[in-house]
Amino acid sequence: MPRLVDHAERRQRIIEAAWHLIADRGLEAATMREIARAAGYANGALTHYFADKEALLRAVYQHVYAATNDRAAEAVEGLRGVDALRAFCRQVLPLEELTLDEARAVLTVWGRLPADEDLAGLHAESMRAWRTSIRGWLAEGRSLGQVRTTSTDDVLADQLLAQLMGSQVMVLAGDVSGPASQEAALEDWISRLNRS
Image (cartoon, rainbow, N blue to C red; front, side):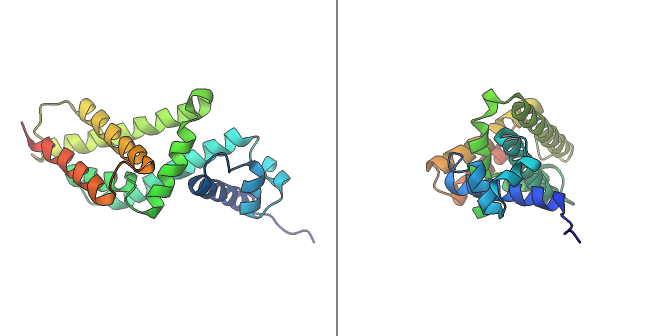
């Protein structure tokens, strides 16, 4: 009797292997052959799940983004306004090994945005969703008296996303002293929300 294959599990295993390989060794080392080896499959097995490397990289991006969102949803549960905003940010910033690895994988994939319209669309959709959430927490913060700045929520959301993404780039480039520095920068930005 032939063995049953769980295709969803295999696909997920390939994505996991790819993002860990990218985070550990970079995009150049993450060849389809190396990804297949890391996942425990023959090289040809990947083509049953991903048409090409670009499709796999899009899946890696979606996986990391979804994992971040899942952690963030858990972290903000029961929180409102600035407290929810802070909890969200702590899931995006590379403050621990997992989020640092995610940043490495995503930043590597970002380099492909100009050449991959589908990936660029995924990224734009992801950032729109984060902007919407950030603006929602800022509006909540205003209603709670936590946000008094005259800057618009749109401007604040863009500033915060730039700070979060910039922190990822700087940490990977070795330009930030670590989690304490990132958290201090976040707290400084948050403290300015209550200034009119």
